[in-house]
Length: 345
Image 1 (tube, rainbow, N blue to C red):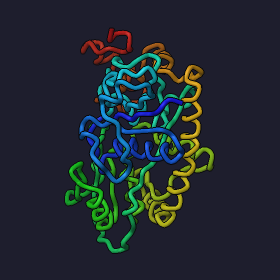
Image 2: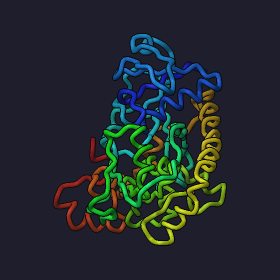
Image 3: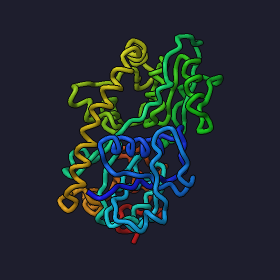
Image 4: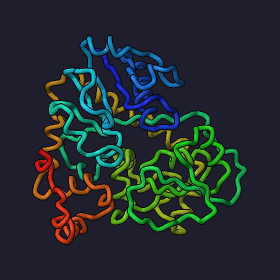
């Protein structure tokens, strides 16, 4: 197998989940004997607490290798003939949907989270690794107060579930700040439904509430997360410590299962190892893989592409399929909105 280079989309930041999982993946691969290095042009390969085997851009671009890019990287900076595109968040959520137009049709596509629209897609492949900072623990001394997270909130005009005096967690906060905040407050409400901070909060003994996505039941919501396949195999309906909405039943479930969260997260991390094993097997027989970008796009570009329409326009992300059709008929046509990838050409 060729050496692997991971090319991050920004400078290392321990509080950025998308960055830390790329370094953590490198660490896991390295522990399995894989020749893997990081090439970070944004911080000149700065040392960090997760993984410190690097390669310069000059050496990387002149060598034969497999390169892993996330969806936040435009094109193929290292001009590699073997590219893996790791989708850490849905296209159109953190980066423009059109980024995929700069990628190669034969790139292999892996997803960090499950994709509710692609669960039955035969070529869908998941690659997930969870980095959990060991500092997080429950000090068991907190006030009856609430904090909240917005970050990647794509839901238009959400109902405000937190009180006016609640504390907001922002991107300026560090890991040490998270530890202090989650141990200071009784509850955290996340309007960013896929933030890993919701899980970190449970390790600190903080009741963790996910803002319910309009049109998605609790089980359907988990189909959009990295936990879906684990839950299916373990025959679970919920993840410990996580409340979906603020009903009394959900809050009580979170409260009474918080003490089980750490063991479950460790179990999940071990379970995710099967993705790593499958991934390495794929890389050993590159041409046999069917999870290419072209196959993925062809699978999602049928009829009026509701998935495309939802992802391309952030203001529509919360809508159900029926609402999308109604929106296009009532407003989208007049506004000249496009409804499929072919219209981008």
